[in-house]
Image (cartoon, rainbow, N blue to C red):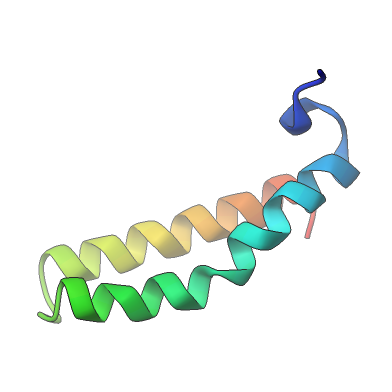
Length: 61
């Protein structure tokens, strides 16, 4: 079976779409898990946003 990450932009877009569509849910869950505005929550939100951007760029979205 071919690796979907190395099978061209169509495969990557198909793989990335469900991940990116759940980003809002993940951001909402962070407020429940880490209610403080500073420290771990801020770091997690920043990491999630960077990862989402990297996924979007890799998928060509």
